Every structure is written in structure tokens, then in C-alpha cells.
Image (cartoon, rainbow, N blue to C red):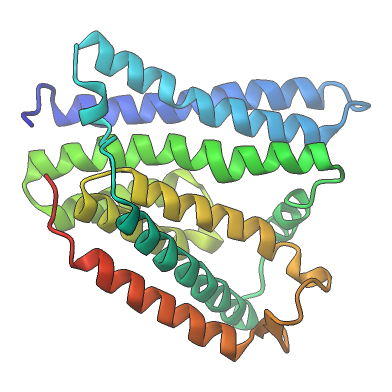
Length: 265
């Protein structure tokens, strides 16, 4: 695949896409805040959905205006069932280990207030709110971000720089920065590297989309673990040792299966 536009244009459209997502989401949120009697959480969830969904509009317009092959430029290549299963196994193990790392970090660096407020936001008051939040966080956000970062930007940088490691690291850095979350910056950056590895190794955006979706779904579920949900998962405020052992096993098995794949260009 030959690049038909410059690196400045590639980064430019990524920035425009991100800004458009913030703009649309901010407008919806602003409408909700302008009416104090309105259900604030509902407007927040809707702003997530519309903002993340609108992220793809500038990108798709850019590619179509240049008559680019949309599926190829966004790495929308099909994967086998074996690859999907291995990715799911790897993803489940990884998010459990990430959860325990986060719990250990909080022993030394307590989570700031905005993180605690975020956990409160991740606890909808109604079933409808839960469905909206799940749609936004576990489906729409991973889809928009993976198509933009791993599907478009990283693939472009791989071809432009001809340096896979550099492309993955820079894309992951950009990915972590746009989340604007200093407390979780390192975790998000490492996640971005894992997502980038999956995209490069499989030649498809679907494996990182699976990992991203599982990670965000896990974040929702873990936000409920402090209100007495599964005793089988937690042990003295940490992930139970037997769960961690299973998680590490999932990571090893999943990674081995993924790593046996031939890199797809």
C-alpha cells in the first residue's frame, strides 16, 4: 500500500477527528448542564456516544474525498475464529492483571478525586443508563479510537517510517495523550502498545478492537467490585491469587497463539 498523502496530513486529520469528537460531545453535555433539572448522567452517556461516533466523520470524509480504499486504509481485514479466540483469551488475562496493578499502585499513590468521581459516573442509576453507558464505553469508543489510531494512523506510520516499533510507540503515545488522564497515563500507554502489537501482528483492526472493548467493559465491571460484588474475584481488596494465576495463563496461551501468526501487511 503506497501512501498518497503526507505525514502532516495524516496527523492533521487525526487531530481534527479528535477535536470534532470533543466538540460534539461537549455540545451535548453543555445542553444537559444548561438545564439543572435534566438527568445529568443521561446527557453524559449520550455525549459519549455522539462524540465518539462523530470522531470517524472527518476521517471517513478525508479518505473518501481522496478516493482511498476505505477498508484497506482502516485495516478492516477479516480474521479467523482462532485469532479471535486467542485475542479474547489474551485480553481477559491482560485486563485482570492490569486491574491488580492498578490496585497496587493505589496503595502508594491514592487515586485523585477525579478518578473517584469517574467511578461514580460508571455506576448508572437505571437499566437504560447502563445500556447507554455500555454502548458508549464498550462499543462506540473502542470502534472509533481503534479505526482512527490502529487502523489509520499506525498503519500509515508503519508504511511511512518503515519502522514498526516506532510506529506502535508513537501511536500509543498519541493515544494516551488524548485521554488526558495523568493518573492512568502509563497504563493507557502500555495498553496502546498492546493494541498496536495486535494490529500489526494480525494485519487487522479487529483484534485490538476486541482487546479495547474487553478492557473498557472490564473497567465498568471493576467499578462495581467495591460494593461487595464477587468475593471469588477479590481477596483482601486485591485480585484473588487463583484469579491472577488463571489470568497469567490466559495471557501466555493467548500470546503464544497470536505470536505464531504470520505478520500480515
